[in-house]
Length: 132
Image (cartoon, rainbow, N blue to C red):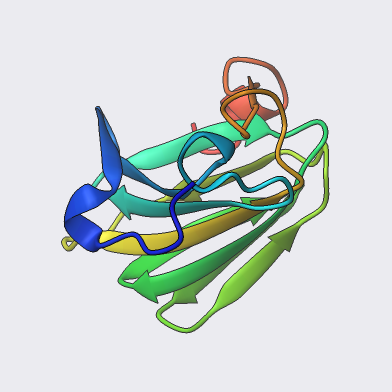
């Protein structure tokens, strides 16, 4: 498995709201306890309300500013700020700014082959109405 991972070798998934860079997951590093994602939220982009039933998560803002929700609480986070998300807790990240926001998402333990599992709840109440 990979020990060192140069930036240009990180697998990056393009999404309509930005990009996920898979820094560490079972497939690439053999990790069993941590999944690490380099997350790019473009202006107006969001990782809408979702949860990870069997994983805890730390979101660390590297650059930019985001509106971060953890459960029913929301707070603006900027570079150097972080949020802890307990397992099975609904959360979301929104970039309403004019510049990209970059986050480091660290989840554990690894779940399934991808190491990462989520349940989208953005169309369910009360989450569907939170930012309406």
